[in-house]
Length: 74
Image 1 (cartoon, rainbow, N blue to C red):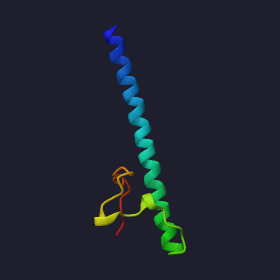
Image 2 (spheres, helix red, strand yellow; image 1 turned 60 degrees about the vertical axis):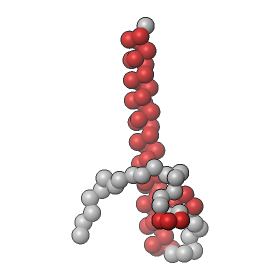
Image 3 (cartoon, helix red, strand yellow; image 1 turned 60 degrees about the horizontal axis):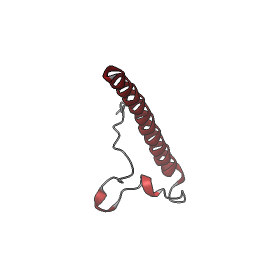
């Protein structure tokens, strides 16, 4: 019975981890697209509070910290 519980825990943990990564990638993609649009449209683009820097130049507590996997070309 304990083995079954451990297997179930691992399976659920794996699923949660996969979903968490997908959500992080979606948030990063949205933030990137918003930044691109802001560069094209300018200040007429409505502000999205959760994508803006908060006081003290810290990232919003609502967003996870995501590192880009894209390489930059100089």
